[in-house]
Image (cartoon, rainbow, N blue to C red):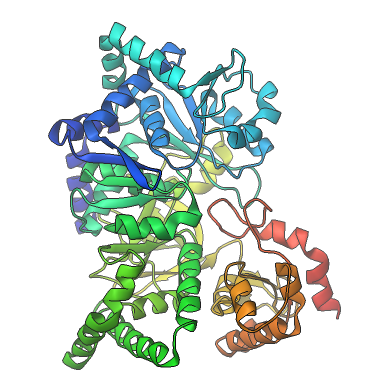
Length: 611
């Protein structure tokens, strides 16, 4: 414990009084010509240096001031990942305001709730698609005085085009630069930097105010956990409404002088990886699952001899990663086999997918299937789990490339306390913890106890080396009618090991045995079917095809072989469509909305117990 507190004190001394505004000023002064942000343009990149980016931020801050933004007031943002999103966010902060990125998949009523709850005064939107989510509720949000549109601004006093907004800011900054400097210098470490909303697996999302001090502690701890080079390249593609993307591609680059490239379309992520060759890459499990499925599909098209060569090489890669886990050392034979496989094939595959320069590969937000982790380990890639929440400003436990155990979420970060409560819940305490929820005193009291421990809602364990394992969400554990406690996530991960299975939900609370509803993977299934001469028009056709059902049945059986008898899925149904955030079965961060799925497919679930 003394060591943890000493580490905490050292970090707090290092970051004392610091703000994001000061950090950007310092970085722009130290490395004015270093590339900061690059947007895709006509097959190339349009790039701003740190000096140019800071000047734009000050102009945007002046624009917000000219529009009447007062210190402490909120600016809501909804747009794809692009430089304007980061610049507008930082501009709001430099004006003394609070930024709030809103999930672009939120329904209008959720948008209205967030905008009203955070007290948004100004909104910045990407274009007509974003406006469509706001327009139905704008009449009920009289507090919003101006809506700035990057593209397609409608006529009317309430709307302002981006170029007009920038011109307004440039004029205001030129006219009175001292007042803008006064605004950003008045910002303090204890001020709210941003408010992020939980994606809402149940009920309305909850706003989490995070201070400059919260973020600085998280970034400093992350830098200690993971050794990343200065001035490296990285990709921003996950929403800025998600804490992981904010820490990794908005705040961390200000410290590491990183060059962030924006991927505005997830369909282009593969191509972007190949162009950028990032030094780090973070993906929620679904991103890694999709990448694995595409690689497996590509491998299946190769000649049999080449497939066998890859399998042999991947066996050597997996053996090396497994032998490199905490407390182990690869034998000379394992090391030699890996080096040979890496030189002959594995390094080529990593280069092909654009991850040959990545020193840190990570996943979080949902359980990472061990089979996916093992697949990438076969390619010589240590895709490691970290664990955190919006409420903890991101990761508070992490594996590192040189300190990891597969199947765990790593050890507590520097200066972070973690313990297991009597009922198995994971608790944590550190300066990165938020002070509570916005306007939700009852929820805050449930989150934080009187001793400052944050209650995660997850059940887990800590081994003798300090590595944390997560069993499941405390409120999502299945308790069967026979009194057995079962983790649905564990069952679901085994079901998803087959590439045809895109999503899975296990159910069985208060019932005699578990059942499951499944979906096909919309990217893998069509190619799989075409390769076997199966005729179909839609994914729904495939979900009814006897050959598909036979393979999925085998996948369920394979999953059951890895489960205890009481955990095994007795019945299952394959649904005709994928689950998405838009169809409301998933949160914007791609977690299962269990209550929504239970309600939406109640008849199907009940039918599996009636039959």
